[in-house]
Image: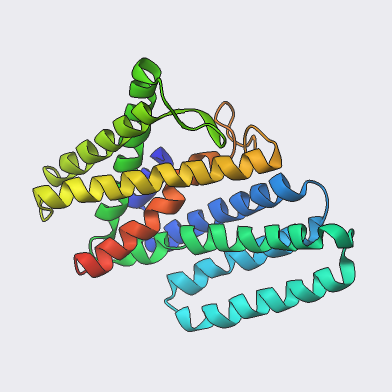
Length: 255
């Protein structure tokens, strides 16, 4: 997040897009390795290449090519898995995992580029980062001190309802702080609703990634960040929050 904040404040849209392409490629490789392990290594790298190709199309506003890109990806991988499957009983799991990763990461994280290009896009990205940081911080402290009722033990046994409510309070406080510093066009009610919406989205994104990790029987999505797990462990909340921030900024507040 600190690196993302620096790039938002000082980097050009091109540099920002290159940074996002690197993050996306690392995340896709991590995601596919988490679900497929050492199998289908060629397919994992090819899916990463296809996924990263979304970035230049979004950065240059060539959205018309996204549809054929998605179509080409599906048809190509259908043929690859048709003739290169390793276990016919598990083909739907392996092919489905590749497709899930391609939708989960390029589709959701890709919203950052059009959001960055909006007139107030940088402010909305800053706001989203503040909301997620505020949510995580208060969720941790409130949950550690007052957490007694489990939120969703089948997916994330350490999270509590009290912590989740504390996280929402932190999200609302973050939006109100932004309102009185760099987003004065937000109303008070707007601030509360946006905080609740983005905070809820962030927590759901976190739970969804936890669901995937438990399905893969891993504690962390990867080990690229020492002491913090993998890229997905850092991005999980943002993946659900950034698309909502984009649609709020573009259609709710005119960009």
